Length: 122
Image 1 (cartoon, rainbow, N blue to C red):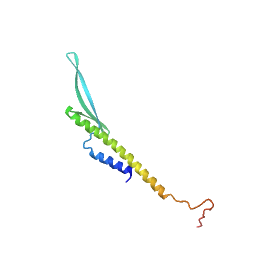
Image 2: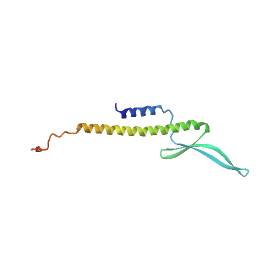
Image 3: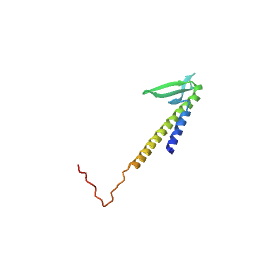
Image 4: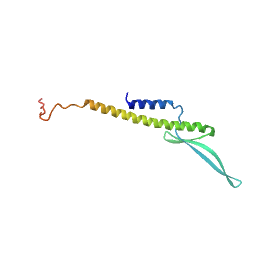
């Protein structure tokens, strides 16, 4: 097994360890309203946004769900990073294999500088 193969296998094992994933971004929002003529700030309110089938979806999230959601979002990003590394390693393995095959299949020249090529007579 090549080093690239072992690295790729390790990436797959890391991917397998990820148990929760949520795509998107989490933002914190506040609302300011006037009470007795003075501004009062309410919040934070948490909003999860993600792209799904070409549409931007928004979901408001309860504060008690935020810690787990942050972990799931980080897991999704980690998974995406591992996928990109997997693709890069797979391409490198393909290129290594192709290079190895080309080296093996190169025809060796039997002519030295003084010989003339033979003509084909059909």
